[in-house]
Length: 594
Image (cartoon, rainbow, N blue to C red; front, side, top):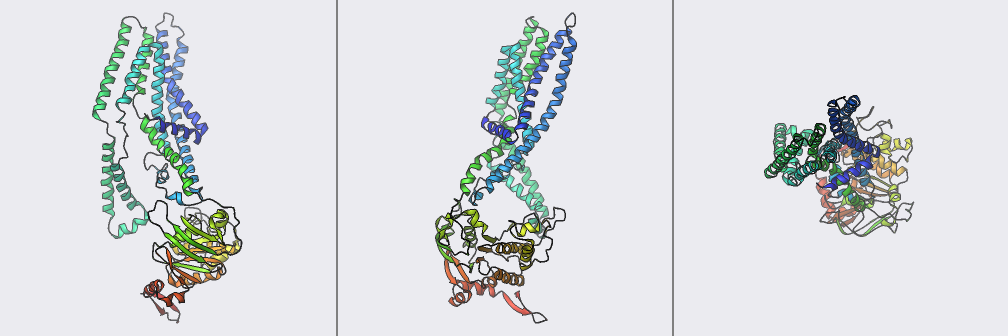
């Protein structure tokens, strides 16, 4: 059996909870010794019963009773300690993977292809939860230790019987080495079938699919698909884990013939008068206990429990280097800064293509620059580079003439106020959602909410999740305004660079115009980068850069680019053709989609 997974598992148990690990091993060892003690005491009781004067029968019976009682109680204690230790192991592994994921300064490690192996720690995705896995290991390890102790004790009564039985039962490890119950259970066929079944399950259970499943009349199809693929998964798992008939028959023949020979010789010695009855009784019980050294569930149980441990042990050393960004020592300028990209090249880790191949762009200090272009030209990638979540693979990003890589990462990010397309919804108070860094006063937070059009949100202590007492949740547009308030709060606390990645994607046209006008007013004099597909927003920026094939194809303000009649003009006219201006009954102007 492969001991390496078990070595890693047992080492992890000791590290996860040293005291519980000691208790776990102590109970296991005591529980493994008790059956042999019981066998010896049974022989002594029989010997004293058959003695002419009865011998010291009472003490022997009391000892036998205590041993029997402990044999009944200890397994329950072992189970409790095992499940507790398994839960501690799961918590320890999850903490390790979380630390390994958040510790690197960059984001490149989060795209590591093996990271998924540790994201399922203790989620019952590839095996039982860890508290049950450790429980299974306990049972298998307990039986194996019982067999070892029984064999060692049997040596005292009959060395040849002990050696013969150990050889017979141990041979099953070799005979069945390729027919482990769970060997190759995760074959390609099993994994594909599990993927189909899990996908059908998600279609039925996840809210994001609920509307379409009902709208298109798919409930019966989803359930039928899940049931069919789940049954096929069971069949595939059985096919991948079935025992090989020849190995089983060979092992069975060896065990039957060998045990008949050993027990027959033991009986023959007794009949011949070479062995007293009390010793025979003890020896027979010990011989029965030796069977537990045979091939059993320890290997697969330990492998299941060790899967998460091995995954974390293997991936943890890789994440740090993959997400590492060298932090500089240069001081970040306090004033508003000019940012310049010179011949910047960039491609995401493990991606075949490049986002940029020689991008040159200057963002003037205290001015706003809008970035436009088709999907996939690298608009959001620019925001990630400016926040230094990644480093360019070529070229330089200069901040006030200093290479961004020479600046202290934490200090640089502390001066950035940003909102991204997939901004975070923190399950904390409204205050913490607007000002996660706690750098603004409550009055400044309320002013930021007001300027973002979210002044109806008054109580800053309200938990922003319904799962908490007094908690609430917001619509997409309301959350967008909270995210914008987060940016405005950052500006009030002294941000030197503002990055707006689709800042009004969830707002209607009228709300977008109002909010963005306030944004520009509040960020006036701050170096601002705006990424948006809405030209009604983009046209208000001081300058507009049009990206095509990872390079700046056009640069200028709205009027200049419209007059150039190039990429910008074509994109603007295409979007503008879908809108028309109308007036309400009071003569107020508004825009509608045709």
